Image 1 (cartoon, rainbow, N blue to C red):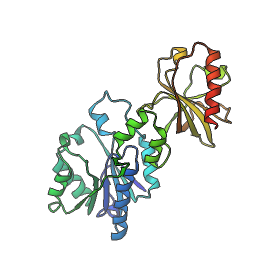
Image 2: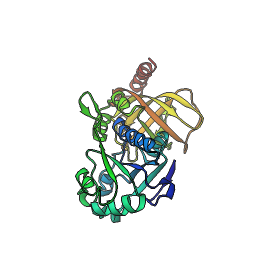
Image 3: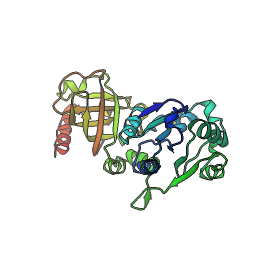
Image 4: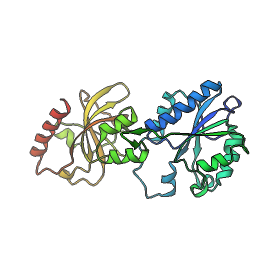
Length: 302
């Protein structure tokens, strides 16, 4: 997969099929759009790629939105690579780009730079200045700019349209098993292990601590997880929260990895969420906390 940090494609990737979207989470609905676009490219023997935007537009426009992303930029790239694209276009979403009109976007990027033959989008796709462009706009300019716009039918599960918004809500409610089904993989948080207060270590329960950065915040509490590092992939137990027993102020993801005792500070790990165990709570003392940890471990190891 060739990665472009702008829409200036090599000649061999022009005149192809492009699926456009934010693709945050790359859930089954996104996978459907990409799969259909890929099939069209294969049938017509032309190149196939994806165009996405960084940062996520809603976070660019509203700086107060902090915890929003289902997957990080690096995760998105990795997941797209698994779908075997010919190329990926990452459009830098900045002030200049955000002021382009819908027609300018079609003319300057789709028509002049990618020379795209088929453009795949989802039904709710919006683009251009103040999101004035939509699927009707694309249809209107098809002939003028020599491309065919194809809108994929939304992917539904239990009569509900699968969307990134739906997934964020389920993550916030701790419905991780449902989320994993809609992603067709376990939802995960990647990050570099940072130093904590070493309280877990003192009570014989060492943890690897991660900051949440831009990720959507899952329901606070304890989860059964699987953890991937450079040379391991192990089961574990994680707590996400503020550690009320210790009057914690910062939100942290703390993970105890089964069978790993070495120092992982400054190492990058991925924590894959499997199941929600219980909500975060404040304990009267360490003895009570230790007792609960034993019960949690029992539940996770079932």
